[in-house]
Length: 569
Image (cartoon, rainbow, N blue to C red):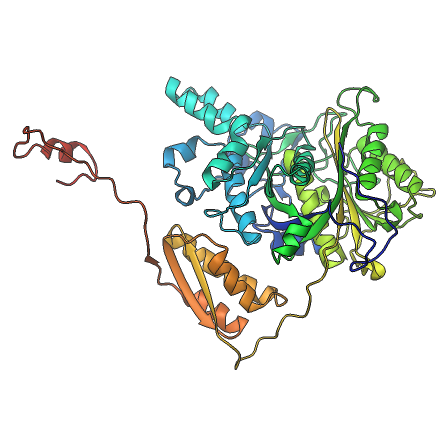
């Protein structure tokens, strides 16, 4: 399913030949990853080529609930892409009771928080969003629900509550309900390709007028987060390292994380003054059918077809691409098939030998299952935005099973700068699911801002930065994050930052504000702003009313005071 652009000659931004009516802008994004609490930290680690997976010690595995006999097995691999604080949740922000939060799948909790942050990154107040906004959500199977049901600690009512708080049917609709979003709310599940398929569906909904904005969010957090038992011939690595396209590749690793993007039609985003992270110019989804060795096997035919369809939808040739973020699981069967399929179709569509650099984020963080496609998309958006291609971590020598003669693809163990040669940088993103549902998205660099950001000036105008949160601890954490963010983003004018904080953030009960003329001054004052005060609480405390009817008597509330904690007469 694709919506094709009109064909075009290759021209840079600003030319009259490029029809942008079917382009979709990425206006916001957020995520948490193994070894990185946010996108900025993660991106710096990727550029350094860091391996962000964790080798778990025996004590930690046993404490998490792993069977001692399994841990001590010679085939046990105690490595995974570990997500820190996956059990934490800011339930007060969303008005969720502690009991409901405890029953909710951690994946769904993280998706709710990350959708909120992505909307904030798009300059939207999640509590007052008036645009018709769709939600497209994907997550891995809920091991949390299985653990609760097999614990036999829930009564019949608790089981019913747990099902509502964990089953995939309610992922997207819970986010829509808690954030007041009124567009389509769909759960999308196609195994490993789920979240990139969700991106494609969100793009189609925007172009078809079903919504004005879309949030695509995905999570993959196993419960508990453990290692794996290597099975001969299986897809999981015996060595505990994912090494895509490498001669020593022996499989993939499980990883945990959550990611979200906010999408708008490009022309609408530009009219609203947005500065997109990047632009989606084409996407496609298909299925292998029976053209493969078995149900779980990949198909070169299906992968070729989906890449060709996405480029057709984009209306661009493969000769304009400079980067491909591959599905790249590091498996002995999957990598050669993917390399062969991509090489064949990209060469057919005009890409010269060695033109396209290959990326493989699973080498850094492991395989994030249902969230992997969205994570790959975010990485690719950063590549085309910043013009920096990270190394393929751990790569030493090319797998001899890969056909290199005339291939447009190349793997580099070192990172490099990509200047785009005067044209917008373009890249492809692939995601392939067990069962044969394939997705591919073509990404383009967004146009540069109209002019340079004004420099900080000690004698310039003062800017007021306001911060609010649901709790005092959350307020301090938000102020600290903003203080860290300011010096790292000198291209964003302080006036824009101040306006976004005032108009594009929810006014929550605990607030602080600082004024200053420079980033350093504002950052210092944010770190020192420790006085949080409650402002404008809308929910009064619970009160028990005894209306009367002539039955009152002195001391009638004493039994309540004796039996109910916190009750006062």
